Length: 355
Image (tube, rainbow, N blue to C red; front, side, top):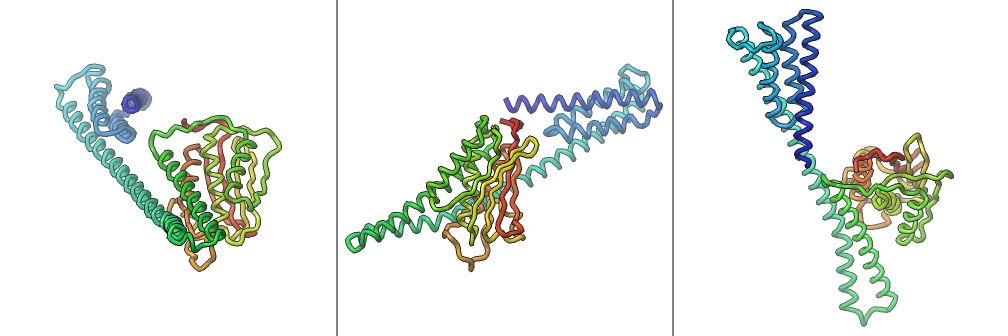
C-alpha cells in the first residue's frame, strides 16, 4: 500500500508540475510573445519534477513529455506534431539532453542526502549501543556480586546484611527494568511503522498515574504538583507520555546533585499543553545542553558526588525526545537562573499528529 501511494504521489507531482508550466507558457506566449523563455520554463519544470519525485523514471518521462508539449504547442506548425523541421529536431535533442542531466543530478543529490542520513542514523545507533553497554555493566556486576555473596557466605551473614544485599539486587533489577522499557520505546518509536495509541486523556488522571509509579520507587522524594483548575483533556499515547514524565523525574533524582525541591507543572498556552519538570539541583553544564537529548550524553564531572552509580541519563532523555517528536510536540531543557534545570515539553491539545 505504501508503494502504491508513493507511485500515485509521484505521478501527481509529475502531471501537476507539467500542466502548471504548460499553462504558464501559454500565458507568457499570449501576453508577452516571448517564445525564447518557453524552453527554459519547461527545463525548470523537469528539474522540479526530478527534485520532488523518486528515482530517474519520472524525470525522464517529464523530459519526453516536455519535448512533446514544446513541439506541439510552441513550434510551427502550432498544435501539431512535426519533427521534420531541423530546428524542431535540434531543439528536441537539446531539451532532452538538458533534462536528462537535470534528472541525473537531482537524483544523485537525493541519493547522497539519503546516504548521509543513513550514516547519521548508524552513528546514533552505535552511540546508543555503547551507552547501553556502559550503563548495564554496573548493575549487572552488582547483582552478580551480591547474589554470589549471599549464596557463598549465607551462614556467615546476619539477617540485616542479607536484607541489605538483596535490597540492592532488587533496586538494580528495577533500574534494569526501566532501562528495558526505554529501549523498547526507542525501538517502537524509531521503527518506521509506529502507530501511537492516541486517545483523549484527562490530565489529572495522567499525573496521578505518574505519581503512583514514581512514588513506588522513590517514596521519600516529594513532588510539588501545579495543575490548571480547568478540566484538561489531551490526545496522546498515555503510556508513552507517562514514561516521558517519569523518566525526567527520575533523571532529576539521580543527577540533580543538591536538589531539595522537585516540581511538576502543567499549563495551557493557546492550543498546547505545556509540561515543566523543575529542580533546584546542580544544573547541566552550558556546553552540554545541546547533547542532552542525543542519546549519548554523559556527565563529565566525575569528581562530583552522585546519588546513583548508574548513568542512564542520556538514554532516558533520548527516549523522551523520540516520544514527544512522535506526538508532534517539542521538548527542551534549560538551566534556571535560580539554580537547577527546567525540562519542558508541549503537546497539541487537538489531535494533529499522524497516527
